[in-house]
Length: 137
Image (cartoon, rainbow, N blue to C red; front, side, top):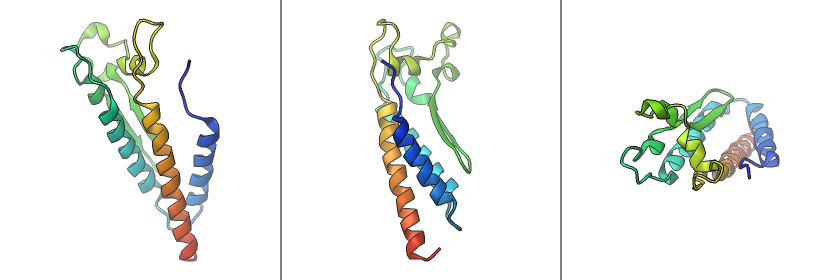
């Protein structure tokens, strides 16, 4: 079964971001940056540690984030940190989350954290919109 986000929840987040972006003086890039950094930190904390001495901690070192004025992105890519040449085409982080044809046990760690963070994002947006309304912006 494929994992992912509820499209309705994403539409709510995007509509709230659009409302916030339309307000003068609101710092949308700052909010997006804060939330992407929080997601990255939480994903790192929840990522399982492989018992293999070769991969120990590689998943946690493979979480990245970026943000701009309108977008935030958090992703896992173990192919960037993998030291073994033969494993550079195998994204272990994706396999841990989704499994692979019954060969690997899934240990979901990414989507659950990011989904909780969407709630935090909506809360921060709502607070900013409410503060703008109170301040008469």
